[in-house]
Length: 76
Image (cartoon, rainbow, N blue to C red; front, side, top):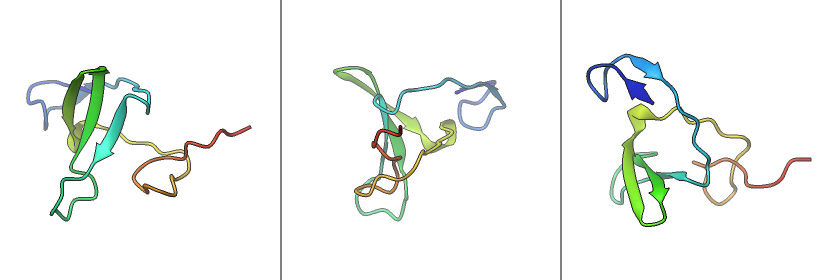
């Protein structure tokens, strides 16, 4: 997501699709957060913490092991 002006509160000017294999929700320990931030893998050894305000998160189904994620089952 690209914002004009402030990187957290500025107007959204672009949305970028990201594969669910490259980004995942993270909850910091000892918080009441459902999701604290998103871990985005740019390269195998390069990770960026993306604030929740900068992600539009759509789930297709639910992962039974992690309700923050969509289902990994193949749909035919």
